[in-house]
Length: 391
Ligand SMILES: [Zn+2]
Ligand SMILES: [Zn+2]
Image (cartoon, rainbow, N blue to C red):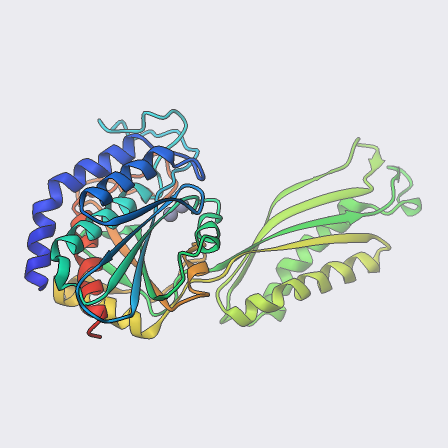
């Protein structure tokens, strides 16, 4: 079966590159993937796959069943949205949508999703069970997975697979990570509320700017002294505002930031931990505070059995020297984790670095991929899917 899958995929390669370039030159922002979704739906329908549009707002779901009787349903998720970035690559098929760019490889993901669907559709009745293809919108704003789940895409799903490109891994290689792949990412907003006064008479006021500085410093130091160093926490205050004039003590400061962690237990304790520090620093100096802790997406935790399945599929397909066991997770976030609240899943990293060029990071205006990775992704996913029912 592997040889057959590889054959079909390499025959499809030129068409897949065309599709990827089409997506690349017509990027759409999160939640506005209308043309991309219509294109995806068109390709799926042309393969005889049952399609539902408008799932999770602008998402698309395709479903394909063989004649096998295995009742386990496998979902394969790819995403479709682009970023508000002005493309600088100068490629012939660069973005025609000013200020919008596929700088996170979601053009390639959607193509890999379609390629996998095309391959599995050609296997037709030989398929032992049902595959559900999820083409998700709005990953970059961490909303799309939630929208898809609310529209029922995880109903009856037994397992889910996903893929993300990785610019520091050479094209042709597949990156496998056991356990945590990405971090939980939450948003915080803190208001420090003091009392205004004359800049020359600090003792008659409560200086919210100075107390905000203490809060930030204490939070950073507390990570090193009170969090388990083997369980990373990253807290970044990315925005700070407050104050009115050089000689007026500020009565109100707003701090906004992101909090990242890898371990579910660490993540669970973070709101109380932050609140304790903010409350104590404020109370020491007579200030009040308001804390809004907004949960974002959880950490992607790869399921052990599915990780083994994808690892084995990739090894059989490409040889063990082209399968990279990733020793480190990323503190980036990925809303694939939301699906994992409903079924076990696995996301692998797909190498897209080219040999003879500079490789720019994700979300960079010069980000580019080696398109040979498309076939690597398609074969890996299609073969892992095939193996799933016999695993
Ligand atoms: Zn991204
Ligand atoms: Zn991405």
